[in-house]
Image: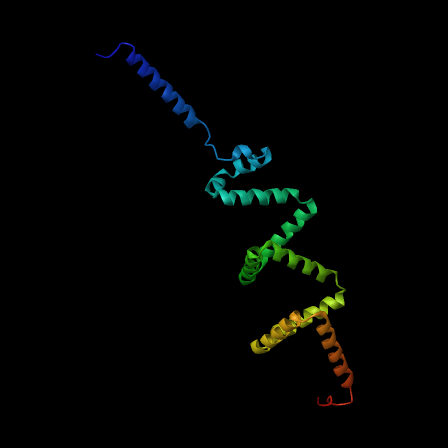
Length: 192
């Protein structure tokens, strides 16, 4: 025999469960991590909720970092970034591909190597324009060399890198004396 109080309790529980489910279904779906965002970031996510939901958590983190970086830029820097993006979009597909490949290689570098390259670029930018142009001209000449000649130049460069400062100085002096011996109008240098 079923106790008399059981059916009303079951009815009450089913009504409560139904009410809870109805309330839950009436609520907008919650997105994990939304509560940790600033109100401004949350508003941006809610405007793009479907795209946000499709992102992997790592991608969401990257999007947030990019957004926060964008917000930290000055209005001038943002305008410059917009203009750069417009120029990029206007490029031919093969040029865009090359740039994206270069960017991929850059992002695969270690932080230390990227920092080294950034310092080298900054030093290059501080050089006088004529010196920068000489360097660029030599780079163009190097790129135009046949592969075996490029290899020879790179081997010489590696040897140079391994030399001590005294050995480099001696080599420079020997090279300078050789150039002085071959002054214009004197023909070939004497055999050694």
